[in-house]
Image (cartoon, rainbow, N blue to C red; front, side, top):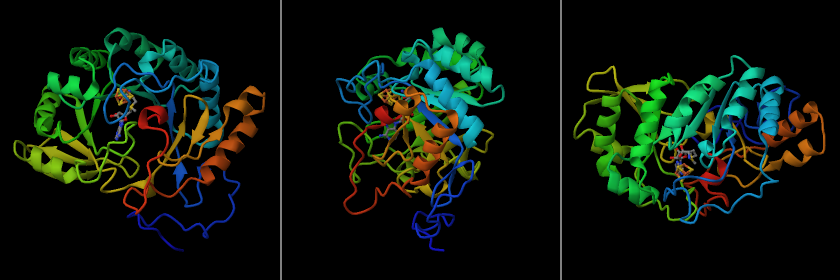
Length: 351
Ligand code: SAM
Ligand code: SF4
């Protein structure tokens, strides 16, 4: 058995398993099994983060092309009943833009009472929606916030909405979405404010994870030389905090955790570029237009929407999903000579 250079021995070569086994789950030809489903429900957003969206927003998806709430609920149900999916996260674009998010959550919850359901959100408007989402059966929220410096936030997101995000975070805590997790993507501008962001999260009792920026911005401005790495970040945080390695919480959660000032508080760092974890990837993605996207970085997508609307059975949809995942590529290859970013940017895939 040959292993490939993604730092993880569990990946088999393509020659290892030429044909998909009749396994019920979402296995790929490198032996990875997807159990975590990310569902993008819109391409629209209230912000325009420079590392994600173009200034004018993404090209709008035709309303007929967008999956409806009941189609999303059916596909989630198939993923859970037929394909071994154990948790579902709704994302976008900005999931709170959809007025039927509560309906989607409630529909999934009615069918699967124990299924962990979460959203990734910029939290704008969450103060008004948190109660309804909790009542619908949402378990957790991950909130994206890169800096607590208002001027910098405005420059980075092209919108002056920091107070609204902070109100959303507080509302999430108030309505029992614990732990509230904050995700921060850093660039050369915001790096110097990372210490203030960590201090704010410690004060507010929310868990902070930093994520290395990936070459998934619509403006294609990412470049290797300027990209902030996990090591750059550790250097900055150590100016104010004592950090001790705490290891990884579980193999499919790619954050390296560090205890802060002796604990119990911790901070996570996801080195998605400099310490690739593709070998442990357990994700499958459904785009807002109903295509399966096996890998963030591959342009290969398999259309389920047409089959769904043509009336095919749950069994057939599950088989198409399995076939799609079997061919998942083995890694992002950012470090490879000739790497080209995928055509879709992060906001159009669903991060
Ligand atoms: N709008 C929601 C939000 O911002 O949380 C959900 C969608 S957003 C695309 C999901 C996550 O992807 C956010 O945490 C965001 O910071 C992250 N993201 C966007 N572009 C990224 C990039 N180029 N590299 C790494 N993470 C990125
Ligand atoms: Fe919108 Fe999220 Fe992308 Fe920022 S990261 S532009 S909030 S989708």
